[in-house]
Length: 257
Image (cartoon, rainbow, N blue to C red; front, side):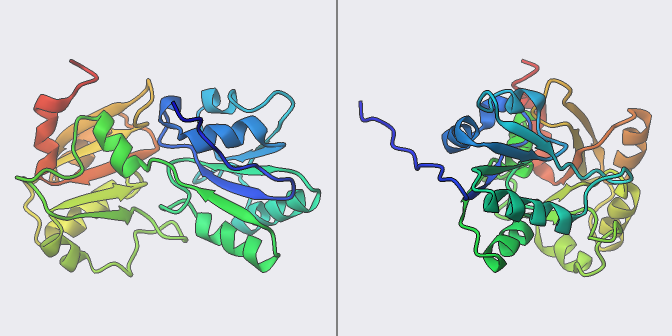
């Protein structure tokens, strides 16, 4: 068996690491390697405590969580914090839920590092739009259901539903839509899709705390998913899935089998 060769985590470097959607078992080997060698772990609010427990003994754990409606550091403050720590010649691991480059603001942080001549590495993670669906028994793609999928954010930088999206084009051309951070504006998003031409009866599901022990999946249609989510008292983080792939859950819900 060939020994696995992993890169050295050098002092003064920053690793932007995806922690995956929640289950610690979904960490990549490179992410775990980084955790075992980092001097400082700057982590998001959605990172599971069990994942933080994998950091090397003595590592500093620096919370930088951003949660809507709650006091939290600004994005520029977080980015500059990474720069300051790297300049102290520390090995800095920026741990982000999911994948750092999929609705994770990893690009903004990486650009700040570039502007300040800080060397960095990006360690991709399993994004919730793939891993979360799989843990709910919903395939992201299925040959008989869809040949395309779109990942959409449920709110822009101002907290509102994105107005720069061509909702009619999305409704017409993409069989499966996965809307991240969908809970706050769920009713509005569903109505926009219906107004843009999606059938009110189209299968839909809302996934809360995907891949964790607290995972909750609410199934319904585009017309009633918001009402069902309210009745079930769904909590964030939550993600909306719209399309015929949702029907596969009846057979592929392996966590309940």
